[in-house]
Image 1 (tube, helix red, strand yellow):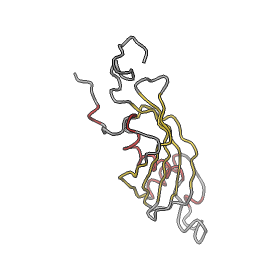
Image 2 (cartoon, rainbow, N blue to C red):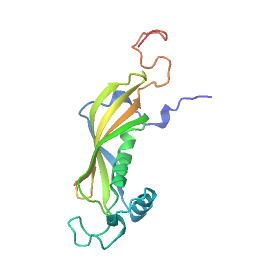
Image 3 (spheres, one colour):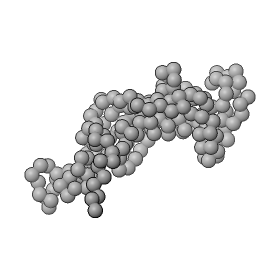
Image 4 (cartoon, rainbow, N blue to C red):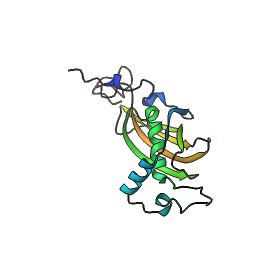
Length: 176
């Protein structure tokens, strides 16, 4: 049986394809509905009135209507970026500097953008590397509503082959 699954993922999102300063506008957007907000907010037991009480924010500086729980906005931003940034990921290593810049309400549409901040070899995984991204989520008005940094362990081309991660010409029992 052939165990090669490389045809199942994109061919331009391996570790070697990311370079510092590279920027991406991700193709898909998503409109946040009441179901996503209510279900997930209840699952994590967030009881803030701004998520549940339609009248609580009426006329406030945060806008009319219930607010979307911030971690839903952040998760959606990461999810929209993942096709281009994590399709060949082996592990999510961290999220940092998460900021919610503007309120998001039911019916807002989020699009995602990314920048590669750093790339480095993975010391314990020779056929993978570590990529640090900055992600932005923008609403339908082009305003940044969310930003965060994310660190991902990403496969190199040839991941899993005995010679992956070694210089060309090196033999299997030689260090890389």
